[in-house]
Image 1: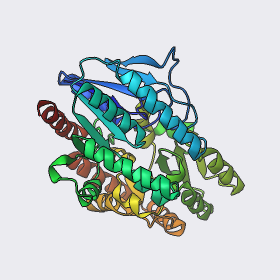
Image 2: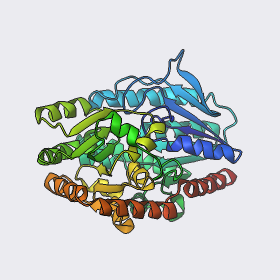
Image 3: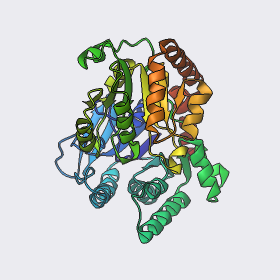
Image 4: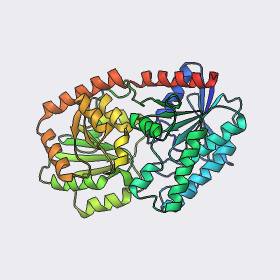
Length: 406
């Protein structure tokens, strides 16, 4: 099979961010199939160009994986209007770029942003090929819940576009059981929506990796390190982390280390300086290939989102990596992520936006290293048994083959 994926936020192992689709491409390659990826020429965390173009797109090759980097207006870290302009620019350029790919058997779109899914539908329709829609987050639900989408007309148009794409897709793939329930509640037939969790690479992230070089680099060798790895955006509620760090100032053994970038980074760094948080380190971005070493440097790992109902339906991918690395997780997200970490006995839950509880739980963990290690072992065991990415990619391959044959 030859699968065409349009994904604005695709990253290679040489960039910061989530590499699930690169790993999917490598897996399909080992099975004799090809996944060609149309991506933007900007990294979604840093907002920086990833490649020099001459024309609408530039072609890259990562160990046999073909990636076409299509033009996008460099404005994703500006205000909402500019972000939408950037998304629209990729929507149009990606259609032109995708149509350069020959002999495609299936077109796969992914959302959010939802506009790139429109690109995939257009290309699939023009080619007369099946259209698989992958829903990674619920849009526009998240935008409405966060207050990003406020205008009633924009909300109505967004919901219409969501409904339009769900109806036009030959099949829908979701990475959360709650997303599937959401779609069934909207009247979609059960046989049209498949839930397959992303999981993680249990060989890439494992407890045997020595992260001491990162601890030495950051001068936290004798500290209790709480790691946050990921985007620094509005949804991530890093302000609650900073308030917890302020409460923990008297405990000079505890440090928060943040690897990542995003629209809020400059403001958050200024706020940390204003609060005189010497126990918080903004460590910048690293390519995904370095993340196993970074996670191995931590004693405990943090996942945090704003306190809105929509986020109770989502699995942050970083949690799977934390678990595979054998690290205890501090989960400041209610819903299915809380259920995951409590089912595995692999960490502790903190009420969203509750900085006092967050500080208290981290203090307790720092004082009980044996409990922290036990949680890490539990988390790893659970993930290997239930969320090994190789198993999940095999399930995805079965779905792709079924759609191509139908």
